[in-house]
Length: 331
Image (cartoon, rainbow, N blue to C red; front, side, top):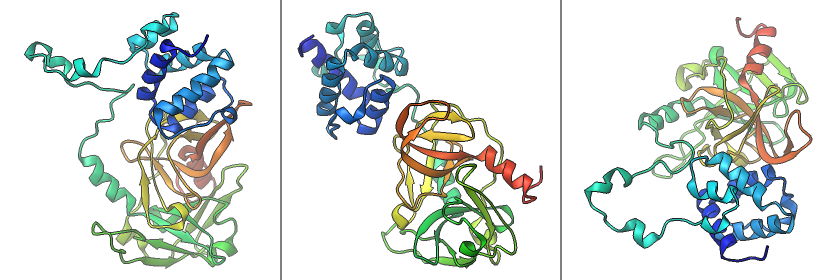
């Protein structure tokens, strides 16, 4: 099939449904295309032109459509495309769409655009600020940094590869409130030493990649604690990560935040992170901790031989099991 208006229609439809490169990478992988052969582009129209050109060369156009239909099962244009009617795949005419049509079409003026609503109660923002308070930047004696968070009993949770030994913990500090104020100024930092003789437990990277260590003093009194409870997370759920990317001031990742794999004590998602984000708490939409971020990049999906461009965390249920086994948490 040569490039023509029918593929252009499909390009336009997919560019609207998957406007970011990260969104499109998942579709590419799920359709069985090799992303190494695709020149991804920040401009959605160019991006999907490149993807569909490669899909066309590999006879994978229908595979791409099938993935999109799975994400948007009620999209009438994609349904027609899956049946082979590519000519019908197009978006609504813009001029017609924005024209006022009167009160008889009032029920059509607002829509949930994606596969699930992104509307959140306004308390979501206030709850997020409260749950960001126990998140800290962890700085080692060698200058390397990661992220971590307080839970009950002044216990700091981070990754094993951030604090692998008692000695590394003893020489490290946790900095709370390392962030910008609403005016863009530096907030006052509150720094605490770590005291592994008070409590220390760790799980190697190949097993769990988490570390728990006591913090000196009573940081819970000022910065609070994140409760750890067993959770049941599903593919398609949303997760938010409060972190210190690049060792910089505290930030939050809210976009592209879809869970794409749950299993084998792991969680994989599309939420953005950077080096320095390891040890960050991963929250669900109710601000419950669901995992501990620990890695990202081209990752193998547990139980599969396929590689995906994703981020990954340790499921909170696995961390709870480890804390109970170490006597740092009651069953």
